[in-house]
Image (cartoon, rainbow, N blue to C red; front, side, top):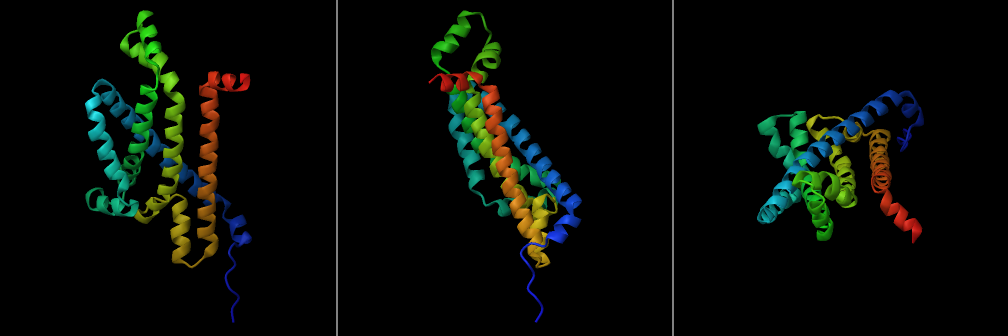
Length: 221
């Protein structure tokens, strides 16, 4: 009887480092595009909600409905419209970031104490000046928390994009399953987890840098 295929073939990994690096970079690029585009759209929606609070319910409900759609079903539904393309993948990926990012951005802005905003007005800040120089810095911890969740979630969803030919680490998983080659799909899964952990750590560091006053207060306590 032939020997069973080992879970990991280290010789294959050693000879395919360039492939692993390429697929990892591809995964990172797909994730960055989706989170960046999702944040820009969510920030715009948060500003609309800030100006007109009545819109929060409909916007949040719409984003929530999209979020409940199974990822593979959404990808499949988009294919007849936009084809097996990067656009299809990004429409789906960006859509899944909206609920998290809109809610966190709105919560961050609403969490700014009223007396702080009033003090900024008394100092002569315009509405936009108050937003950029006072409110956003104070809202940053909550916004970054939303970006952390959205990024880690998107890293997982990008693996599904391989089913429509968009590569990333999902390619290793799908191709490994198709070929009954455990090394590929195990490696793809492990690298996806490591990438999510690295992204989470990166946002933790970014939050500490962006909010030095919070770190100082913690150390003083």
